[in-house]
Image 1 (cartoon, rainbow, N blue to C red):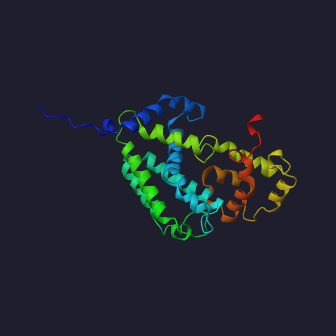
Image 2: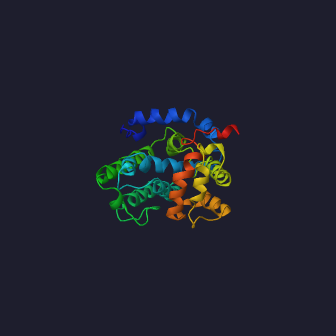
Image 3: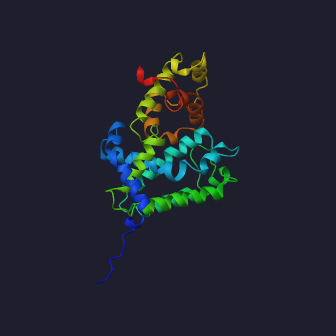
Length: 257
């Protein structure tokens, strides 16, 4: 009798244990974090994908270096990549879409959002080898997880957990509208206690760039395409507002108000 080929899922027992463990409380985790339908799940998975292959890796060392992307650039590029990652999650062939996404991330001539025209080659000096290897390793890991049948959708349970753990307050997550609302409150009230400092709110408002859209337009931009805001506006928001608008930055107890 011919031998039935062993399934890859059965040979990768460590990943099976991981996925089954994540699945045990996946529904409760989603409900607790407001991920309650297919669209919210897709957006959360996209957040997790950006974190998994790009954010939590050598790009953070680039960010901390003298030539690397600023806080504003990291914010703008993250939101740009979220839109691309969402296309991967929605793709009929996620594996091929992920490989296309990987090529975009590895493109050393692509201009990063929020940098005024700089590329990976400009921003990643001294880190490019580690950056490339990290991306390839993480993409390979996700491609391997796609072969598993021990859970219905391996990427769902894995990427949503990454999003909730490391990106609960990122654009694309249910908590992002609350962060944007807090930004609006801070802009309208320079004396709000979340500013944590005498005169800090007044200083922030006084330094508002001329290119800043009116409050309603700014709110819409932050909810949809913050990466399209002028670089100086992103720098202003990063310097003054994001620190005060919510965790993990602000010690202010917003949820108790």
